[in-house]
Each structure stands twice: as structure tokens, then as C-alpha cells.
Length: 142
Image (cartoon, rainbow, N blue to C red; front, side, top):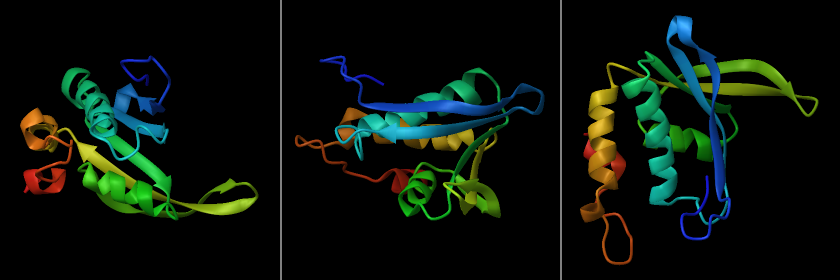
């Protein structure tokens, strides 16, 4: 991802584990630089990948997986409307240590309501003059 004005790289996110025959795709390798963290732009980036996968490409399931010890990533997944499904214990070895992996999903049947909440949250009227949100994404989903 690039900052619009300067074209400076500010983040990265991508699709992983793309499985068309099962209609499953994963969002991963999310790395936002400081200028992008906790901003409307980072939320919009995830929204755009979800819209492409579930809305336009017709995938049935969008996954988010993260280190079960990464509380920020787990909180982000829940804030963005993914449902926690469980933890795969000792799922992999990273840097010679066992890693537990938390799994989250967003289903095509859930997407229309999540999409509407994203669009209400991203609307400029949801932000004050200083750029602070008026309503949380979670509140707009309820």
C-alpha cells in the first residue's frame, strides 16, 4: 500500500491460501507502518480485500489467522467482523518454538451486513474535523 500524496510505502497485506475449488481465501501478511496503524485507511484496506473476495470474486469464506499470542491481531480480526473459531495448538514452529494459531472467519452469508457496517463506518460523516470516529465499527454492526 502507498500513501496517496507521496506514494511512499506504508503497508502490506495480501491474500494467502487461495483455494478456489473450496471457495476459501485468507487475508494475511498484514504489516502496517506507523502512519497506517489504527487509521481509517487500514480498515479500508481490509474492507477492500474482503469486498473483492466475498463480493466480486464469489468466495464463500474469508479467513484470518494469527499467532494466538498476538492480542492486537486477534482484537483487529474481531473488530473487523471476523468470528473466532478456535486455536490450533502447536500449529507450526516459528523461530524454533511452537506457535499456536488462532483462526477467524467471515462467511459470504455474513458479508452483506458486515459490508454495510464497513461502508457506514468509512463514510466521511462518521468522522469529526480532527478525523476521530463518531461511531465504532462494532456499534454500526449491531
